[in-house]
Image: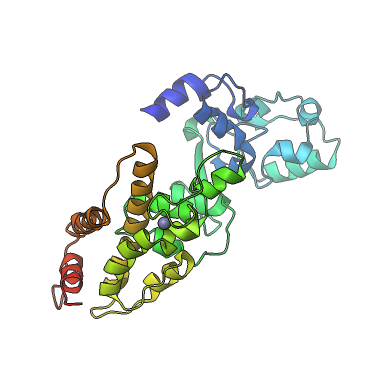
Length: 329
Ligand SMILES: [Zn+2]
């Protein structure tokens, strides 16, 4: 419905290619206008009746958008308006141009010698999207398009420890901020000139910084290690090591321990950060026992929604978690 509304009220009334990103447009529409230069390489027009295809801006020949071939003076040279449709370049069913006076005009005329002029009997013009393979198709995939226009960076080692199927989105977000050292810890606030105490509110013994909170702090380390240590021996207490560790832990059946540890790591980060904020902003405090109970409850609530993955043993993630947590120390 939103697309229909846009088509009727915004893009149906004016030529998209001639629109400027005016502040009067909504944010969404302005962004659509700002990506015109990217967009034009992603779409190709199949010419039929020529009433929709933009003569200058759509790729309706093998030459690409003709405005790029001719430059800004093209409309004057061919005596075709900037907002003209392809239909307007015909007369009596034939292509109609002034005599070619430039190389682009010659190229165009050579090219059009193999292109049928638009005709009402051929139906409406339609568009094709560029596919990741480089070919064009009527099928549009937002993922395929995004993968073509995004700037690809090398994969980061922590990626699969933050974004994974069993993850909780709001936990992943706080974890992602922690990976980048972007949480508003007191050491950062002080660097920005704010007058705040430096001490960690969880233990009163260290500084409120990323390294300390995750997991040098006695409080947070106890939360993390008491659970993680039951899943696999020697959990690291630095965040950068913990990411690699949760991805590499082996188990039988395979992958179960790693999945649980990934969830446990982000749950611990989230709930430690939440407890830290509670102590600062509401002057209330959960004991370490209460925080551990909350971690355990959160883990169970999340794991219960996943059915057994190992079809041979019928062991579920929750069953595996119980087996580890309830084992004797
Ligand atoms: Zn501390």
